Length: 489
Image 1 (tube, helix red, strand yellow):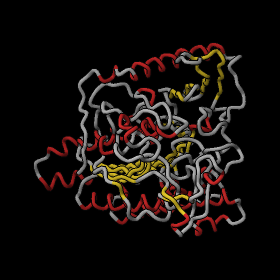
Image 2 (cartoon, one colour):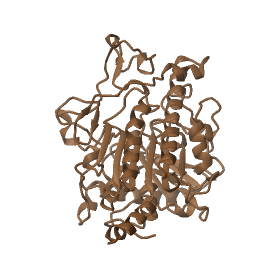
Image 3 (tube, rainbow, N blue to C red):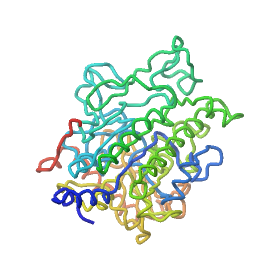
Image 4 (cartoon, one colour):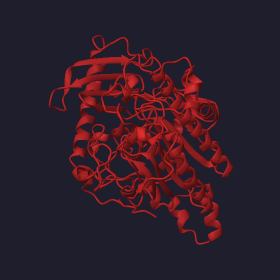
């Protein structure tokens, strides 16, 4: 395949147009706190996800797909940089921001002629310097100002952080964080009983969006993402669209037509299940729009979650039996649903046990376009093409994880997990080792009878932690790169 750069240099407008059609469109869908076991294609018998199930049947399902972190912001950064978040200072949710020196997929693809759009939750920096907004936005959060349009996105419809999954700008007047009402509530049409949630949608010009914000938040997002798709096709430009749903992050609220599907369940579960089904409906709408626009065959449509489900074992979100949940580096906190649909390249009804991760998005997409990284900064992802084609069964590159006080190291077979020493990047002495091929639910710690393997993996993990630490100090930025900024259309 010709490089996109060569494509843009072709003199004949007719040839250029023909080649542009061949450049695949790319869509990254990410959910918020969706558990591995919260979807039909992973065996859930209660939550209705017919469109995601069809997507799974039409493409490849990753049985071992990992979010780069067990919490929100770090995973999101990894998806558009190919780098672990500890390389650029986004250690947890609501910390740090996407630095100007970081290269994003949007910036690289925009350089190659792609239209780029972000829709939904951003959570990689604040979106306003003037108004108090969301978790950190406003005058107090200026140093963390890093909106999508400063990171390569031409079109934006974005929030800094979470919003309710129905009528996203509104909450009951008696809503307070920490109260039981924070989990869910029944939608209320009478505005006198509601108040503003405190988080806003912003566009690429830095303007607050105030219209067409009622109903299912997933639909509110898709109402912007689909016109972007359609206008891109009309302009004969390939597009890169990032659609990051807020569902099913708390508070979960579903409309009556969705809660009615789960009559008999607790109210909390009705709203949790219902908002997932509402989101699934919008994914079906997106897939249909791709078909109607004539670009479904050559669109890479990715789907995943940013981490495992919220709460404890009695909460509605399910890990599929994996140990741990959101905020944990055990499998249930980082193993998430993962799909790729690309009809022209990926065989339907396929699945793989090959370990894949959000850090693999960037190298896989760039390889598909025959684009090289503009510089030699270290990345943590790999090109998944061979694994997707079924040619490679074993991952040779390890996956490192850091979050809070925990660290872990995942090979194709083994997982080493430990706590870090207080106020230190050094690994503690209490190490656990699991054979994920035999024990995916991490029930049997085999560290004591596998000392050599523990030592080997510990050394590799320590080397990787040091590499991340060097990156975090800015060592990767002491070289020239093709870093650019898109300021909007």
